[in-house]
Length: 57
Image (cartoon, rainbow, N blue to C red):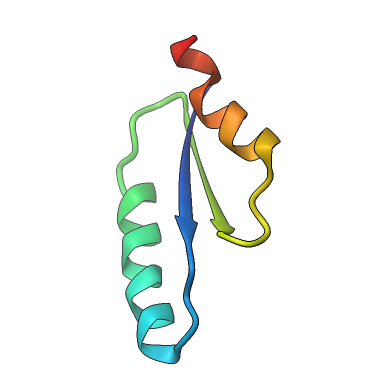
């Protein structure tokens, strides 16, 4: 299964408000077989990134 990683750094309420529609849009009518994952930039791990690109290797 492919993974779309949405990484973010929402340090203020206005930025957090922007993240929600972006994440919702990524999940809306997504193609089958795509898992959408949302991680804060400071908590995303190398495993998160590798999982998102593993299908391209």
